[in-house]
Length: 132
Image: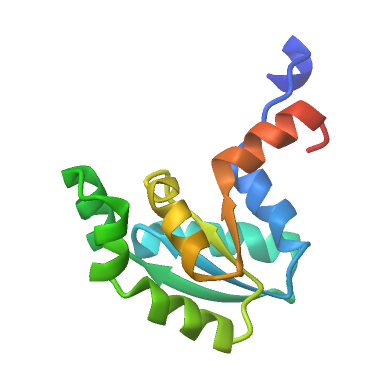
């Protein structure tokens, strides 16, 4: 399709593979275990030596869908302690592997200096660069 129509197509799985090559150790937030497994699989294809701390947060997705404020979610789910834990494990970044999670990105950025990766933004940037 890409070649036939001379268009650039970027998928989340391509982005996960590319991101994996930039890190030695990364935390991945997903809505559920099936989503996490898909992300891990793609990342291992990009970097077979990457160390992934995978976490699933279906309850956070439910809070987002209810319209709970990001700061309330951050407090309820102890983002400060979570970020400290992930940093202590040696993670270099947190990948938001669910389309809901950009909703909480700013709250995560307030409490940690770990790089927070919004895959949607990464996809848009990749399309602009046309390098995937």
